[in-house]
Image (cartoon, helix red, strand yellow):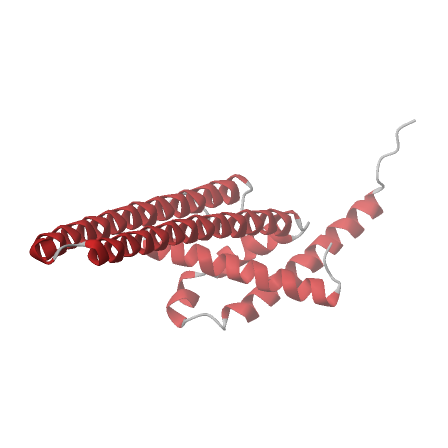
Length: 197
């Protein structure tokens, strides 16, 4: 025989949820005071109340933590790719300098001017290649980070977190970053106090 929660159990659950909502809202209002006033004005009572409702069961904390973990892995991977490219460039430059020194040691004096001109051209060509590859790497990194932002916005929007939707408007992205900061600070506070659901 299936048992259904009694009316009194439903009332207790509803009361607990309402208490948790008020607690979260109060904490969010307190945390908002640390933000610049221009952002405080953009975060209405309704937005904070809706955010508190979204945080009640702790699922949003888990989603945000997962997104943060993915972001950190992505950033580490991109940093390592850039470092690898930098190391490759340093080795190429060192090899070219070594080749040039060797050529200067065996060069006849009547060919010295031609050799130096050729070496200067080779050095400039390598420097141009390095600049171009670094520019392309930086563009790739920016594109990947921009994509991560869109993925995060999409995930949070689908999870029903207020204030999140896909946008590349810098002001809106900054507000979303502030909302995430509030969520992370509240999660940290609840973790330390042991009040997480």
